[in-house]
Length: 264
Length: 262
Image (cartoon, rainbow over all chains, first blue to last red; front, side, top):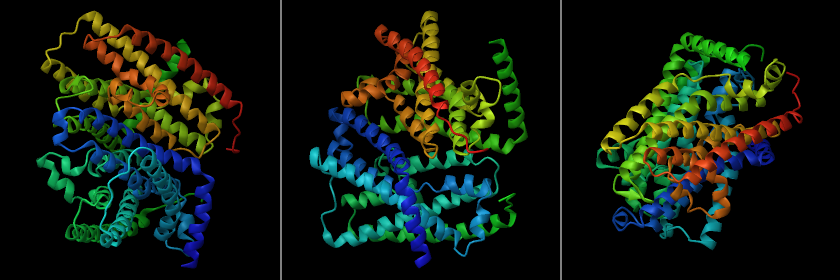
């Protein structure tokens, strides 16, 4: 554990040294949030728009999505695929007395904390000067919401690691990266809250694992879910997590057998 | 000029050969490209599912707007944005030296080296969808309107390219910020929405976004016969001005480039 905390400490220094990179990642999600809020502002001025949801609900949802997207949306897949697997740097990790997975986990965590920090600061600024978002009011449910947030992070981390490991079997990873980015945007609730989707796709959207990475943590933080629903969300997160863990281990062992690195 | 045309023809042949060599990669890129195009349309369909208009644009007009976005941005992604992604990796991995020693203009080399043929399918899909929506709206497009649309689309592409290149030139100093490419994809996606929506931003923010607001707006308005000729002038002036600025800034940045003994 001490070694892993040392890794965390080293990469915290690295992340703090490259704060601008974290800020750019934060800006990527900020642009999406601002654009969709601008859109809903115009639409919900139309009296028929208010039947969908109110502008204050929209502001609350997207502000919390900003924080959730900054903190929970892991970006490790590019480094795993391009730098570790395709450029062959994975061999360095294989020679070290650490688990590659744990190394990557503690390497990514400081970046998430810093970007989450940007999100929280923006949220606080907007809450003080413009409008505070609707948050959960029942204190007894807060530990459950925290557990959902932590589980969402673990789920996103292993999902992105699985995506990164696809590079074991492809020469050009960018095609897969684009596909997974599209899927993530479609089903995470970034575009439109999943409960506002048409009936034909709503049930599937609410069930699939990506919804448990961003959408459900945001809804839980808003206080939109009751205690039984929160337990259901947590349960489903762990079901998906166990499945992802199994898939990850399978891909890791299979992928390592065909991995070759030249001149590293 | 003839020399660069010949070089570009050769590059096209090399890119085609690469595509035919790695067919699975091509297939993946086709799926991704069509996926992005479909997602762009899906976004507008979902956002307008329960409303009839937004910011003075009817639902049908917004869908047409996004079809035109798919065509123009599709062409941009086919020829330019793939090179911008390559530029970030080339600078970060210290491979820019190999490009700078070539006896051709370095901006040409970094901007036009790779062609993403897979994006043709996205362009065709967007074009087909645009023509279908125009039919649904009973839109009558005259030849002068079409000609003006093509000129404006070309100016819009120049404007987009210049914006991207101006931002990504900063990678010479900040080579670690390879995620600037993703930032630009996200920034560029704002062009999917009407100018009237983006004008809701505070004025000091709208100044930065304004060139983007005109990129799809102005060509779309040409087809819808709702053109403001002031916007046409601004698009052409901005396109020329920003292209000149991008060229100057690239040369300025190269004076500060330090190789990593590649």
